[in-house]
Length: 638
Image (cartoon, rainbow, N blue to C red):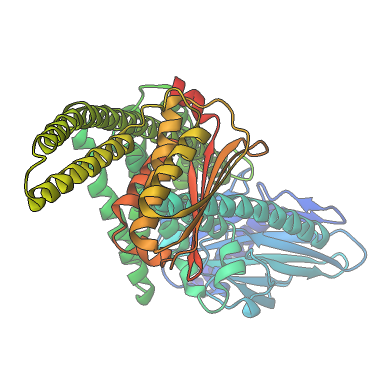
């Protein structure tokens, strides 16, 4: 009897306490507003075991849930427990009313919403989560969200079971009207679409630079951009919605820690490559490289964890450590930047990285449960990555511009030095030709003339000599005459003595007259008006013409040669055209094989004169067009 009385009293007290606790929990009043504040309305409970919704609801009624406070964000860092959330909601309208409740977390593997009526009975349940295919979610959206339809003046309790075991518990809660929810989603999609476009173009720019420059820093920068993009999209649910879908839905379970660590690691490697040639502290460089490689290995562990079910403690360790390693990567980036504070560009890089480090710090520390604060809109991750990547893209573009400018300057100096070198070679050649021509003409030519006189004198004195002796003397005189003529020809070939006195047309005219007599070639020479040319340019054009005529004599088996020289006023060029009716040659084959010395000399002289050649050859003959710009005169005279 006494036991029964005590039981009745305890049941009465327990029911009274439950009613009292329940009476203190207010309801979220929904009407026709666009969105509603959930601060001080949501309560939570940690489930270290495996409660069902009935026991969880009873705990809520018994006041065992803790209040979330004024914030609409729940964050206990990484956890191996399930978490329950509950709040009351009441329709103030005299008509049916629909709202959308969003536990907007990128870490929820599965979330189940139990809608319990005022009598404490289960009215319905809905599920969502990144561990489910999109068509199985209550609302097909990139967010974890639920549609709740309330009857007129209806009051219900929303009991939410969340499973993010082994992952971050960072969950912002939102309650909106359908119109407000979808307007927000459209605007959010436009924002992240714009962010994705900017980052994609930045990566394409980096790939183009890699294609042209073949420097590893650009491919690492591309990897950094793409991992940042996937991290941003993963954090806001778009990675699943736009990329993974049902085929790779499991990847969302590690997306945030995986791409978070990978982006931080690539940022570190990019900075190391960017400063590689100037990094003073080699110990810091080696330590950073080791940590970068270790981070990549840890990303492999994260990938392997996809095959592990129900091992929440292991997943907790892997994911939490990945986020922590990401923070350490940012610290190394900061140390590398401090080591490079030598000029304004490095200070600018420090500023860019600080902005990213600041944004990523809050993002990672929120995931780790250290903070629950977002200083930027939409978040520090998006803004920090955008500013960092846009700034680095500008810096890389400027670096490419400077490298190209330095390369062009180097090429210009090499070309200038090469021209000076060729000019010196040509001057030495001309001096040597002058010396040889003088020796041939003055010494050997004079000696032959004296020998000829001696032989002629002997011939006159030996009038009574036998006929064979006379014939031998006559032959000797003729041979000496021919030798003297050949020496004069060779001397003229080496250095025309009239080059300073005559213009180019006169030099060519004299040359074709001498060659015509010597080789029995028929020449047709046409000349137009030419500007005044320096001796240097006349000499080089004259040598080019002689080289081409020598090739015709040796190889072409031609009988006729046509030469034309004139000034092209439109192109401001001196043009020399040489055509023959010889057998021609395969110019492409000659170019692909070991090119002849004659053509090499021709190309060398033209390169020095900034000129160009065009050679067309076939069975009916060969035509060579030489074009030399007139402004070369200024270079030659300078």
